[in-house]
Image: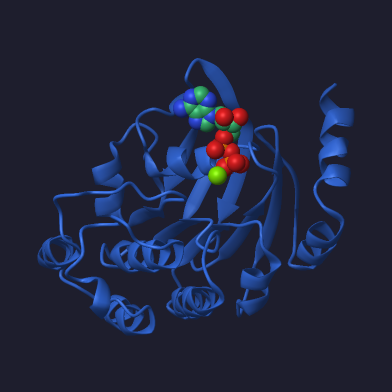
Length: 242
Ligand code: ADP
Ligand code: MG
C-alpha cells in the first residue's frame, strides 16, 4: 500500500476541520478528490504532507508501511511524499535557478523531471524570483516541475488546474499523464472536469463535504458530480450526521 489514512481528525486555528477521513491508495494509483470550497480538501493534503499548523487529534497516516503521522515535513519529502500547493508563496530573494540547482544536488535529478521541464517550458522562468509576479499558469507549471525534482513516489496536487490558461492546462495535463505512466501514486484535488478528462487513468474518485468523505467510487462518478454539482451528494452527509 502506498498510503493509508485512518480515521483522521484534524484541527487548525482552534477548529475541527477534518472529521474522520479514511483513504487507501495502492502503489501507482491515481485518486481524484472533489468537493465544494471549504470542504477540507487542502487541509487533507497539507496534513498528509505534514504542514505543522494542521494538528492531528486522532487517527494516523501510513506511507509505504511506515507511520508518518508525527514526522516533520522534510522527513516526509525525504521518503517520497511531496505536495504541490494550491497557492504558491512569493520569494523575493530566491531565484528559480538557485532552488532548482539545490534540489538537483540534494535529490540527484531524475528523468521524469527532465521531461516535465521541457513540457512545462521552465527555461524562460529560470532567471526569475521564485513565484514572484508570475501568472497563474507560470506558478503552477513551475511548482509542478519543482515537486518532481524531489523524486516523489506520492504526488499530492492541490488544484494544479485552477487559475491557469488553456495552454498551461494542456501542459499540466500532459505532465500528470507522465506521472501516471511512471507508476507514481497521486492524489489530485480539482474542481474542473477538463483536467480529469485529459487523464489517462483515474482509479478512484472521492467527494468531500464538511471535513468528511461522503462518497467514493470509480471514474464514472466524476461525470455525475461535475454535471449535477455537490449539493445532492453533500445532502446525503447531512442526512447521515444531522
Ligand atoms: P478546501 O480546500 O476544500 O476549499 P480548506 O481545507 O482550505 O478547504 O479549508 C476547510 C475549512 O477550514 C475552511 O472553512 C477554512 O476556512 C478552514 N481553515 C483552513 N485552514 C485553517 C486555519 N489554519 N485556521 C482556521 N481555519 C482554517
Ligand atoms: Mg483548497
